Length: 464
Ligand code: C2O
Ligand code: CU
Ligand code: CU
Image 1: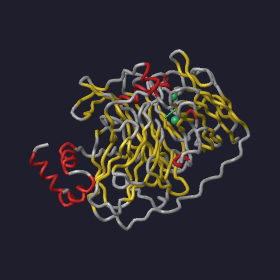
Image 2: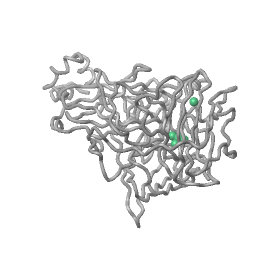
Image 3: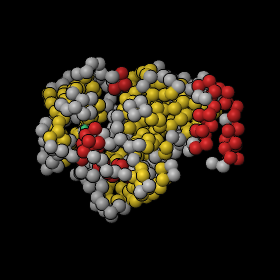
Image 4: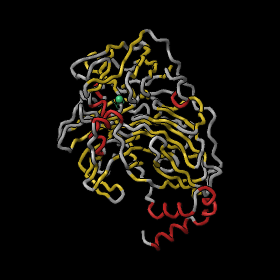
C-alpha cells in the first residue's frame, strides 16, 4: 500500500484509534492496516426458477488465485479463483444443482449436511467424468442450516479439496428466528482452511507422518484470504464457521478474549443460544455463532486458532447503528430423539499405511451396513489409535449421546453430522434414517480427515 493510501485508511479509523490503544498497541494496528485485505464474501447463488424447479449452475474448472503475493494454480467453481459461490437453498423447494466438470479429471460433488436420496448424494457412485455434467435433483426437506459442497472422488478428495473445490450451502426457512440474516452484512460465511503455498503454488505433498497426524498448512485462510479484515457494525454479528481444512482441528476463540453465542451446529439451530468462550471444530464441522458487538464500537477482535497459535481474520467494529438488536433467548423446539432399536459399533484403526473401519478399507462394491428406514440406532464409534479422527455420516443428522472422555461438549449438543474423536476415545451417537430408502445405492460414513478418508477410512450403508 502506498503511504498516501495508508494515511487515508488510518484516518478512516482514526476516530477510534484511542479505543484500539487499550487493547492492541497502536503499532500493531498500523502494521495490520498496512497489509490488511478485505474480507472476501463468496457470491450468493440464488438459482433460477423454471417450471417449479430452482436451477443452480456450478462449473468446476482450473483457475488461479493470489494467496497474499503468491500466485498459485488452483481449482474453483464458477471462476471464483479459489472455492466457489455460496448456494442459497430454501426449505420446501425443488432444486436442480447442475454441475459441469471442465477439469481434465473425474470429480463428484457431494452436499455435506444435505439430507437427500442416495443417488443424489454426490458420492463415489455419482462420478462426473471430465467434460460431463451431472445434476443433484431433490426437494430441500430439512431445517435451516449451514452445509457445504465438495468433491467426494474416491482416493482424490483430499487433493481436489486442497486445490480449491469447496463452497458453502445455506439452507433457509421462511422464518429467520430473529437472527441476523443479511448475507455478507451481518450473516457472514466463514470457510476456514490452511494451505502450504510456495513459489510454485499450492504444495500438496503430505508425508506419512503428516497423513497420520494431520497435514496442516503454514498459511491460514478465511474464504481463501490471508488474515482479512471484516468491517462490522456495533450490533449482532452472525458467523457461519466451517472447518473446511483437510485434516486440521481448530480450537477457535476471540482475542481480546470475548464470549460468543452458539446458535447452530451442523444440522441447524439449537434450542437456545449457548454462551461459549471457545469452540473446537474438526474437519467438516460447522457452527453458527453470534458475537454481541453492541458495546464494542471502535474495537477490533481477532478470530484466533489456539491449537497451532495462528489467526484467521480480524473484525473491525467501525459502523454504528446496530445497537438495538437483541439475541432471542429461545430459537425453536427440537424434535425428540427416539429410543434405539439396534446397536452398531465402528472401530477406527490403521494397519500398514491404510486406515480402516472395523478392520476394513473402503470398497465401493461392498455394502458394509444395512439400515432400516425409520428405525433409530445407537452407534458406538471407537478411535482405537494414537491419532485424532472424526466420523461423518451421510444422509442424516444425529445426536451425540456420550463421550468416553467425559461430558458431551457444550457445543455439540445440537444436531450433528460429524463428530470429533480424540485419540483413544469413543462416542455414542443416536441416529434414524427416516426420509429415503434405496436398497441399491449406498450412503457413506467416514473419517473426514481427508487424507484418512482417501486411504480407506470409509464405509457404505444402504437404507431399506
Ligand atoms: Cu463432507 Cu462424505 O463428506
Ligand atoms: Cu457428507
Ligand atoms: Cu481419521
